[in-house]
Every structure is written in C-alpha cells, then in structure tokens.
Image (cartoon, rainbow, N blue to C red; front, side):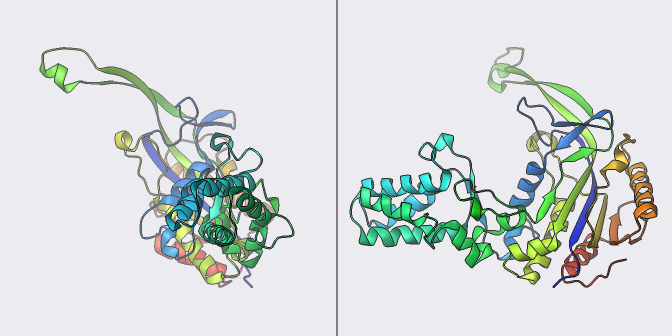
Length: 380
C-alpha cells in the first residue's frame, strides 16, 4: 500500500497569439477571477489533448486497454462486427443494435442525435459483441434477439456493465480509470475520476485582440481582379497560464485493478504530457506549441490545495514574476499550515521554490512522481 495519497502538479505555460480553446461563439474561453477577466482553457480541453497525444509518452505506450467515447458504438462497432460474421439477417442485426442503444444510452437511445456520448472500454465492447454473437447463434428472429439483449442489462444478470467493472476495473478502459465516467443507463457502472483537472487560466488579465484577415482567390487575382474572396475575423489571445492537476493515488491504483506499477507509469506519463502537450485550436494559423516553463510536483497525504490564489491579484505575464508570486504564496501557506508534502520542480529560469528539491529536468521530475506512487518519498 502506498504512503502517498495525493500527487499535486502545478504548471506555468505561456502561449503567444493563439486561440487555445473556443466558446460557442468562436471566442476565447474566459473566466472572471480576482476582479479581472482571464483567458481560460477548460479541463475537458486539456484532458482531451492529453488523451489523444501521439508521442513517446502517449497513453498508448502504457499497453493498457483504452476507452472509446462515442454515441454510435452499437452501430459502428457491435453492429458492424455482427454483419461481418454473417450470422443473422439485417432485420435481426438492426433489432440487436436498437436494443443495445436503448440499454446503453437510455430511453432516448434509439435516436442517435438524442444520445450523450458514452465512454466504453474496449474490453466492454468486445464482451458485448461476443455475447451478441452467442445470442444470435442460438435465437432466431429480431423480436427474440432484442429481448435477449435486454436481459443482459437486467440487475440480476451478471453480464451488465456493473458486473464487468467488478470483475476487472480496467474493463472500462484506461480513460475511464484516469478521468472517470458516468453511465446514466447503469449508474452502478460509474467510475470516479482518479485524476482531477482544474480549468487553466492566465495569471494576468486577458490579453486579446480581434484578428482581421482576408482570403485571396489565386485564379481571379491572376486574371487581374482586385479585392478579396472573403473577409473574416477571429480572436487571438496571449497568456501565461496556471495549470493544476491532482492525482488521487489510492483511487488510481484501485481503478487500475490494483496494479500500482501501472499507476506509477501513468503518473510518469502524465507529468510529461502536462509539460509538453499543448491544447489548441487553429493549429495551422497559430502553431500553439509550448513547453511548461515551471512545474512543481508535490506528494503527500493531506488534502490538496490549489496555488491559483497566488494569482488572485493579476500579475505581470512574465515567468520570473509569476514564479516569485507562486513561491511567496507557497511560503505563506507553509508558515500557516506547515509543509506536509515532498516537493520537486523544474524551472527554465533555474529558480528555487520553497521546500522543493530542485530544480531538476523533466525526466527526473516525472520519475519523482512515479516513485511517489510506490511510497518511495516520505512526507516532508
């Protein structure tokens, strides 16, 4: 059993002239804080980019079953697999697909547009597909097949999502184990998140401008016409963002089926992903790629606490100033509540932080976090 209950990860990351996360009107997401409007990146956006990152530290490299978030799993995965097998006529397959949709997505599941995207593990999808094949091998007719699928999801049946989760927590896939999931049609199959991600926000007041641009038609221009083929505008923002992530270590190990070695590797990968993977829209026109310039990792047992309040009063958007503000706030917390965490950090400026061993490089910082999962770092 690990001695570490929580791992806290704090990061400062700067992006110039970007539109990292848009709202429903196409503008940069915002957050009022400390009497000033800040530019924001939602936790959903951050998690999405960490989930789908493709590099040496991607989640794919962990050799753990993944999850699929979709509204059309019955049609595109289960139904397609049944059709490939050719073990039933089209009407029966459609009845099976409809029954799965109704049971997985709720009473409105028949209409794809009315469904909420559901996170299902690849093992769950494979199991449900296998059970559907077994049913179709024994039962004839769409009505009987649909009723047999309905029976799979009854509370006294041992083939529902709850039972699959009880048999192996990783049946719901890695994403569910890390970030949780909600199954409205089967609440007992819900998974509590082990990794808690706050919305990132700028440590200073928003810095935005409207970017006016035109599109030129090459062919009409070559023919001698003047003017633009289109006139557009968008919003760009520059900002130094504070990012805060908490890992509930016992919950993570439990969600991973008790595999603390895998939990340690997950945390190691997570530190790399937070530091190096950039969220962002408009990739082609803004190239919003940046690495963290400060990252602090804390390990311990007491309740986590954000360091966001170091920036309740907006500060200048400069790494040395923001680092000093964060460090001063950290010292004040230590003076008031004591330092109950072990700390390590990286800093591109080479700056020290209160109670921290460092600065170190990213590889060392990620190993520090990984080893904490196994209780190898005592509390301060």
